[in-house]
Length: 443
Image (tube, rainbow, N blue to C red; front, side, top):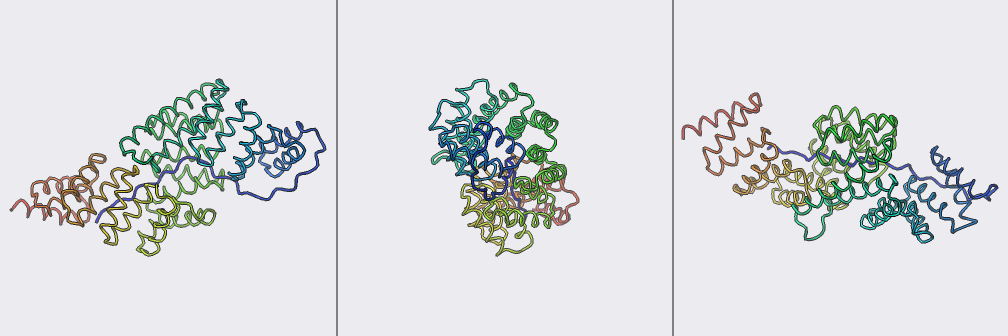
């Protein structure tokens, strides 16, 4: 049996800094404006505890200080305290809803909380209030990109796959335009360059994506998010070795980046380095036990090693945690296929396909599931769709040849067995396939 696992490509986002307890708010010994300036400087230097203590001191004496709420929202985002960041952003918005900075901070806090409809509204308001602010256009582009990706994992009820694809394409295009405006206003804006490169990668526009990301690297050679985005681009272009080197650089720059670790594990999986995948997945799951991509990777490794019970636990948990995750359903379907549960595999793979799962991989595996169920016509349709996406994939030709042979289509089987032999003349089973072709010719 020949099946494929859809490769995980995780969005190029940095992991958050672990939260730590903040000291009690001190009595201010300087004016509030000075304290907030010192807090902002401490935040920029990465001294989050000091930054938080200073801003807490200001808010202890003046709970209506908009600048303090805005600053504390940013600190909480860095600490990974999403709810607290949103609470401060909302407080600032109630106090001054005509302030473009407040609208932008609210948009980002809502983005972190995955409240994307509200985040888009806030981001559009920020752009309306400050039409020449690159930070506002970057925030809007980031939110639109997240909404586009959400269509893959959680499409609205009643929206078909093609409709979701069209809507996603429109959102990505609008995100690109906003991010290009942000970069045009500030060519040295690293976050906007990274986000622009990521959107272009998702659109399949490799050359401009690399150009944007290389500009970001030139501006910020020690920024982990730049290397994560470059690694994702390498994965998209089939350069798994290059992706490994780039993701490793990201982990050197920021050992806390969950995104870098998960993407590095994914690249190692593509290269068949199962030990490396297991070690990296363990590190991620120790920090985030409900990290779905890490569960999918660990489950896939366990499946490949024949540890089917453990693999089932991981992959079924991944699907429960993220029922809209196409890769999780695909991996679970692949597991079911490998243990002979063809109908369960069919259901999981159909779900993955409906959620936008990797076309060739899911179509091929669906073909195998239908073949195992002796539903040869449906198997044939799925293999043919897989070949539309990857016409030079030898194993798909083999699978289709076997299916047509079982269905009694002698000439069709010969054609696809020959295609398999042309593409993989030195395959371990090439001799057996040649003999089968001879037998079919003699009929």
